[in-house]
Image 1 (cartoon, rainbow, N blue to C red):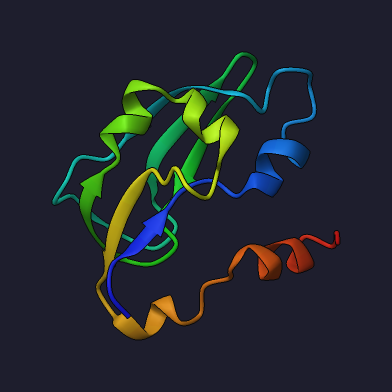
Image 2: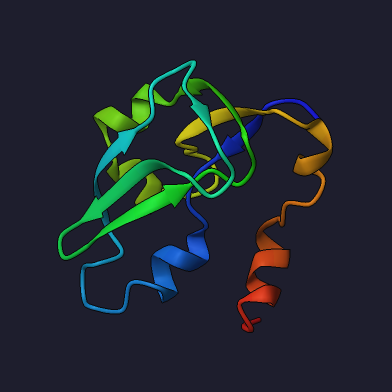
Length: 113
């Protein structure tokens, strides 16, 4: 598999940030291009009115690109979490990307339908 777009699941925006307003993205700090990351390492921070949450690298790899449009206007993630990715990551081991969950798989793993 090639580079993977990494961002926020819409599920998280609606369900993980319970306090009113906490799920609405207000600011993003994202790793710089060409930065190497380990699986599980924080590569971005999504800040809302009431909370800041790390976004972790799903697999080890190298950040190829940062979505500057989302950095400039973080509210875009609120409107379309899947269409407005945060960064593109090239997996160090392409086979690792095949183990990642899509949105339906993530919702099922979270125990909600």
